[in-house]
Length: 197
Image (cartoon, rainbow, N blue to C red; front, side, top):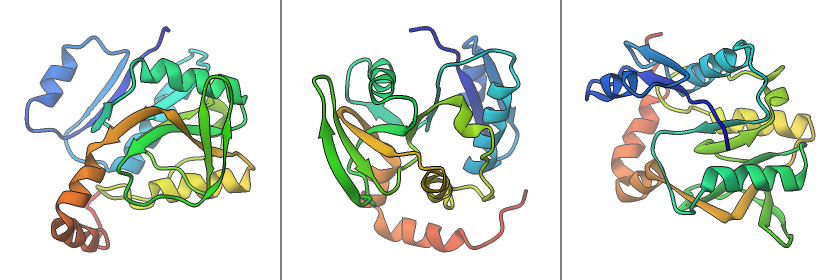
């Protein structure tokens, strides 16, 4: 499967930015500060849609996921193709902290699907057309409702949201939430403090 990488680095100070610069990525934005997840996602979506390249799918990935299924990206695209173009899809996430309400499971010869009320943002497969009229509005260093915003949009546009049960990733942030609840309780309070943008 052919694909291009579009990467946003939000002010890394651990050498990540230098490593990324040497990777020959299709598009790389090295920000000197943390723009926050929503603004960064918007910047990457704009870069993709304005690239002059016609892509079949856009796959948004957090940098802290670990694939647990071989060829998880290709398998996610296969699942999207099997379901048809009118959905927003994610691999199943190990240890998801906030499990959404399920509308029911569906199985085919190739995959098992869970249709849900809301979809997290660790890995999301969409058609480019999903982004024709939608951008995130929340500002800040954390997601701050990023998943909620796109879920509300999907409901309004009648786009089903689906977890693919046969394709699995682990989201490290979810693991950290489970392992360090007091720290993240404090961080969640910090979300209400405006972030200097």
